[in-house]
Length: 212
Image (tube, rainbow, N blue to C red; front, top):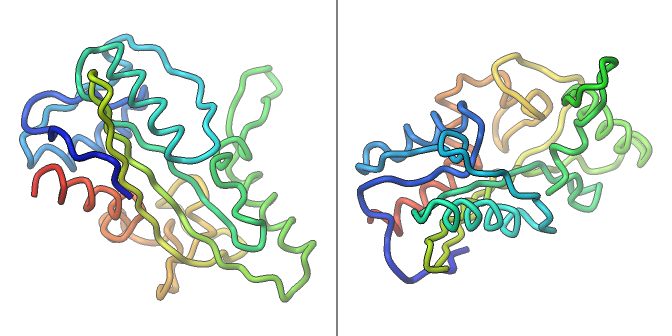
């Protein structure tokens, strides 16, 4: 999916609409070969907008546009999550929300094992014949200060397994089996996962249009 026919990123600086240093490092590594210097919204002191969208694309655009408007520079944001066929596409845009909990100190946190267990419990309620198909989605949104924007969507299909397996991934990776593989995302080496992931798929589309 692409909604942009205007200017390209080109070489220079790009704001990555995140306050997560790990995500900045990952995206920087993907864009560095194209002469792009990445700066995080966090390092620039930009606020984090509320993600009120109903789709991955809406949330990614909210974040990208907020950073572009606040910085006066082109900005890139992503939104991603897991969708389960038997659950009508849930958790979808609420993927991270399903892992949220309050720790005993009163501090917010995320318990991904709890979230994986919630999905497994809902599937169990549907009986042993419930399909276990699932997919990961990633939407990358580019926004320019003049209001132009571009959206690129990546996806990887697979199925869910139980119990969780592997320690190399994060989030729902330990229960996701990519199509055609017998190892979960959390059992694959990072370079193997990154080569086939939903984020890699979205970045291939972005690179093809922006730098091709």
